Every structure is written in C-alpha cells, then in structure tokens.
Image 1: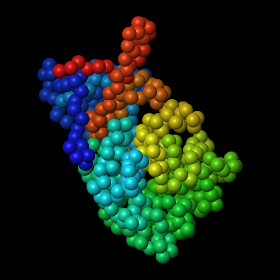
Image 2: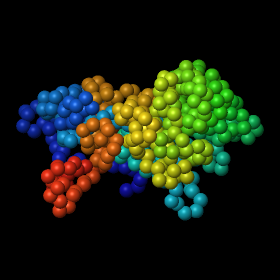
Image 3: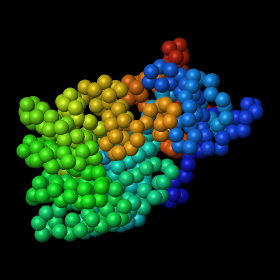
Length: 425
C-alpha cells in the first residue's frame, strides 16, 4: 500500500455495535465513546455525530443508538493536540545515505509519513513549514499540497510557504515564488527574516502579501536581537491576531529586563509565540538550543503554543514529532503545570492555527485524544496507548502492553499496565 494512500485503522476487538437490543435504529454516522474519564474526574459517555460532539452524559446514561462503540474505560479523554510547527518536506531524512532527494514524489512520501506519525501521537491538525526557492523551486510545496489531499479525512495538513530571501535582486525570485505558492494553495505565509540581509524589508514583504491575500503569517525567528524584534512586532501589530513567530529561543539568552520588555511588546501586538521544547528546527540552522522563556511570556499575556519542530531531520535526528513530549518538557523543564503544558499543544496550538476551540462538551468539534491514564500529569509522564478521533471517527490507535513476568509483587501491588492483551481470533 503506497504511503500516500493511508487506510482507516481497524476497529478494536472491544468495539462493536451499540444499538443492539435497544430497539432503536443505529445512526450509521455516530460513535459512542463509553466510560471515558475527563480531567475533572467524571466518568462519562460521549456520543459523536456529524463530526461534532452530540452529547456528553454520565456513564451508561446515553441511549445506545450509535453505529459503533469504543470502550474507553481506563482512558483519559482530552481535546486532540495540534501541531503548529512541523517540517514535512525535510522530515525523516536524518538517516539517509547521500544527498536528500527533493523530487515531488519523495517529498510527498515524507510529508505523508510524517503527518501519519504525528496523527498517531494525537495531532489531528498539522501546520507544515515548507521551504521554497533555491534549486528546488516550488516542488516541495506542490508535494506537501498533494500530501494534504491524500490525507483528507485522516488529518488536516496545512502548508506554510517559507522563502529564503525576499529583498534585493536575489530576493526577487523568492517573492515571485511566494506569490505562486499562495496561488497553488499554501494558506499561510512564512519565512525566516533572520536569514535575509534586510530582515525588516523581508518582514514588510511578507506582511504586504499576507494582507493582500488575507493569509495568516508564521515566521521563524530566534528573537535574539531586541531592536529587530521590536521593529517586527511594531509592523505585525496591524495584522493581529493572525501572526505567529517562533521558536524565539534567543529570548532566553537576553537579560531579564530586556526579555520582559520584548514580551510586553509581543503581548501588545497580539503575536503568538510557538516554542519548540524538543529543540530548534533546521530552518534556523541550529542557532540556539534554548526554549523560549515560556513563563515570562505567559506572565506578559502572550499566547504561547508548543510545536515539535524537526522530525528526524538535520535539525533533530531523533525528533519524535510527539505533542505530548513537547508538553512533558514544558511541565518538567519550563515550570508549567501539567494542564497548562497540555493546553500549549492543544488549545493554544489550535488557536495559533486559526482552528475552532475543542472541549469535551456538546456542540464542539469531535477532535479528541484518549490516552490510557487517569490524570494529565500521568499522561504526560507515560503516554503509550492512545486512540485518536478526527471528525468524529477513530483514525489512529496505538496499543502498548506492559507485563511483569513471574512477579507476585507486581500482581499484589496491581501495578498499572498501558494496555491489555486482546484474545486471539
């Protein structure tokens, strides 16, 4: 089966029709999630229909009219993560021999596989930054747009066009290609002003084109130059709230008073900062390895989302592309509480991407992640078994089993296992 033609995961042996014996006809477009635990401690049933959450009730209270049922006993049910900063065109290239291929077919294969890996982790929406220009021209953006089409129904993939140069004679081609990329279907305009000889001119060109086409803006910057960052935020203010910048690791290297003023400026301009707790991406050529000062930014009122960045490419040869790992690092190293850290990869990430809010309540989009565990702190610590719901259906499932062999102590303590062995056919 080609990578660009993914299939829906099979139903769990424990899933089955929920309408049997009730006398009511099953809704063929509905799904019942039963026995799920919520972050407030309740155990509930959740009925999904038409891509949205139709009802939430105490366990056993919802009529079993759904066409299928998934038993979520032992799982914590959460709004699904979203990935605001991926690089699908370069993903999975770290272990290759020889030069990396950027043919359309190869980039499409990598972008599709990367998006599926991230979907398996729980990210039902992915924003992929794609380099254009140089010798590869528009081929990478064409490939990622093809991957987006092949993934329809499984995950939402958005392409960000990232030109290298936009100013001077050398930047004329980049600006022309950027316009063409938007016409092709790139829905976000990105870039790396730090790498252009004229960062201010670069930013002006991006903002003008974004205003012309009504596109969001998502820029790479290390944010290690306070004067340059101040100019950038001053220009960006008029486009609020559709502007994101990141990974901004340079802010952590500035004196505290300087970083605080910069954070205040970002908050006033309505700019979202997308940090990369797992490490920088190749787009900034590993200029800094420190995560943005998340607590300082949040204290100033800046919306902070977290992305995964590099997925096994030159930026991070062992990158996992796992939003829960990004949240884990924010909780373990950046001083955020576990719910705040998870929000950075879910609610804040979705807001940064212009996606509708998700809550486990009736009327909200059915973009959900079920993880074996009973509270967010445990989920961020050890999150192997996962069930991913996109547009109201299960699109990915990961099951892990932990067994303690020949140990009466393990049995006596009832130590938790990530999953249970299913009986064979």
